[in-house]
Image (cartoon, rainbow, N blue to C red; front, side):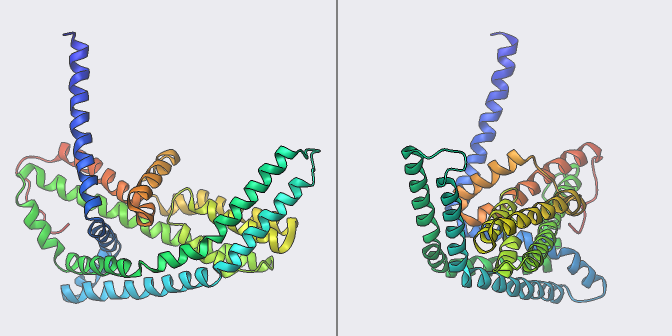
Length: 355
């Protein structure tokens, strides 16, 4: 057997084993989907609240009390913000649907008028089909909202499990981690702890950055639309905030909705000003906010983000769409930190007592 073929076969065999292991993990996560989502959400809460818990514990607040205070405070803010955003979007969803449909009607009517001298029967058939499809899709928004409301019980179950996970992890996670690393060999204990710390930092930084970016974008879009006298400015700003958690795609969808509503309610001039507003906000986000806030979080190429979000959405639904990038970022950060620390750690390193 040629030497090069032997080497390539060895690489292919290792890739096959790694791929099968990854497929098995994904299959297992799909079998316990609710538990998997709850654990991921709980880990996200822990990564966000761990600095606050450490700050309280440094001021002699009991461990369990510090964890409960942080989790309850976070839930109060999160639930209040979520109720406001969802109520605004749901309450105004019929008006948003009508505005989007009306904007498409205006665009199709403008195309039918033949601005470029194109007015054939084939083009007319295509436009009619497109108009019918858009109307059917937008008209299904109401039923989609109703279907989404029917799974509120499952969502609450996931949030409840994630909340208890976060409380127990924040109150005794350091002792649990010390017990875990004590089972590892001495030269693997510090790299494992460094990897865990890196994944916590990456996840926390991503959620902090996404939340602040969404708030700034939503406020700027809402204020700008109000100044342009575009109706539905508040629900569009709320929608912009929610979609900020979906990388690459969320900002584009929110911008398209804002432009279409402005087109239907204010005409082409208002739509043009709205487009300029959206582009200015996205430039501010891309050139100022994201580099500043995401400096501690891992960033991926847009193509990788697109593949991650679409794959996770098809496997785990809406939750996968939101959590694909931070989960992958946490895994990548942990692997990189582990390999770096493994090359630096001497044998016999003491066990850290706190992750």
